[in-house]
Length: 153
Length: 140
Image (cartoon, rainbow over the protein chains, first blue to last red):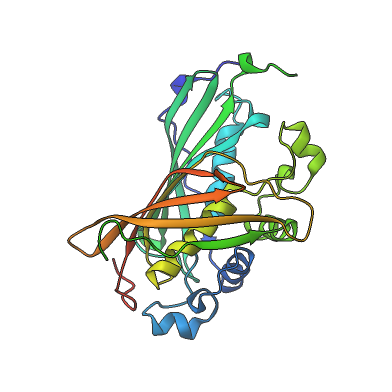
């Protein structure tokens, strides 16, 4: 199953809004051991000038990972999804994600490459709040050993 | 804050219980993060931490150094080696260190990050831009 290099440039329809909840932020922050008051306590967040609790920097994976999976699972891309590992990850913020946000995600396949036995896809995911307000742009690069590199199976 | 400044190294412990909890919080239930059997089948020595868990620890270091939970403006990593997490109480240790690469006119600082577990670098090309000394201003 060779990688379909012409898949680059594809875009998915924007996702349905993800409603960011205080308790989900708190749960995520606790799971990574982040005890900053602004992630847990609305009053503390407001004291720092935020309208509600804010989320830790990597929180948007809750929104972007399912989108990336739709792309990497697409048979038309031709990636061996059983062998996929995370290559790179980037977040470029306009402002922190916060409780009450209704976030949508617009995704585009930025790059597809096959080199030295490694298939790689780079996805750009733009997260917007209500009214199209840009919040954060996320890039994920996912890599998988190409079919012809399967030596051990 | 000046180029070359070294932030205090942050050391974090990751146990199997932490990974299970992160599976639930992040909704990433890939079995290589909880099953030795399936991790072995995938060619790994055992259960490994989520790459995004390691990145989250680096994020904690950044906000700790900045003194501001909203400090991170840009944050990029490459996952170069997995963090192996043994099935015991001690878990794995991840140490995050950082130094200032440059400071922009607007006061934001570019940080080079190093993440090490079991003596190996687990992140590559890890870099962030953080806002420094502007706690209380949620705008950019």
